[in-house]
Image (cartoon, rainbow, N blue to C red):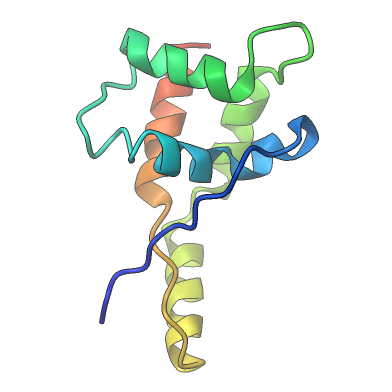
Length: 110
């Protein structure tokens, strides 16, 4: 079975960025966790600033962290992978490592 890739797309409108920022990290930073970027590093802080913004209209990082943690369930991801296999489709690539890295980076840079 060949591995799935995450489709990279252009910039998203600010109102939809939260829904796609994990995919943006995977595309633009080539999965920082796998490339050894420490979530507590200055590079991670820059990445979060680029993705979420830093101004008064930027989302609160604690809110983003809460949303990530609420959605971090390996069982749900495995269910989606198995469902794709049953349907004869390519299983989606795992995003759990990206979400875990993001959660760690958000904890380190509140």
